[in-house]
Image (cartoon, helix red, strand yellow):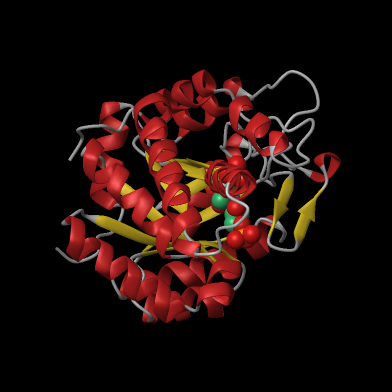
Length: 309
Ligand code: G3H
Ligand code: 13P
Ligand code: ZN
């Protein structure tokens, strides 16, 4: 089974009103934890790689690890570039074997975002690769880019229609109140569901994407803090809101922070309890299991994508 695009996954997810998890990967243990969970849950899956991940692990290593995961599990996996900031990185991932790329032109003007996205769409489609774009601006941190809450802009529904029509993009990330990282809300968590419903009604049968969708489960924050972490005030998107989003055309839900928290809490705990150990396998094994448990939890309780293969 080769890598697949997200086209069929999204079609089924849209019809079934569930979402596909898109999990960020940076190394072997993260990849193994995620794919083992998807295999056990019989769930479709997107693995996504950021520019930072490519810099950390190198494109070729991540590519080969994901190919190994496909061979090992037999799962139909989509390999996606997360937040490509320019044409060159998208081209490099298309040429380098990814089946999906995101061109994130959200920091540009509407017209420049359209022009850039269209250029990537033309190139990628010609090679059988699908494209996600972003309209509106999320708050939070990704790579070195930090967007303050006051600079975040929610997606305009009418512009979303025009954007999709003029670019021919395959899916669209929208801003409705989620944000990247572990500190998403200062007070009560709120998403603009009225806006989501409007966008979804104006774009029937079109897959929407939710970034910044980690839940930041309090037990993992507590576990990190118990073993020396400093994550006071961390707060994510409640699980019921994410499940609800799946009913309004959201077919892809991006999760990175929750995997980082699960892995780091596990490593912190292991090392605190076993100060004499220095074999990386001893602390990476439970960390990999923590990733697997977290992904299984997401598939069952947030994505509703178990047994959809
Ligand atoms: O949205 C960003 C993802 O969490 C990836 O984070 O750019 O630090 O790899 P990164
Ligand atoms: P979180 O930081 O909420 O996990 O979001 C990840 C993301 O959107 C990756 O593109
Ligand atoms: Zn994102």
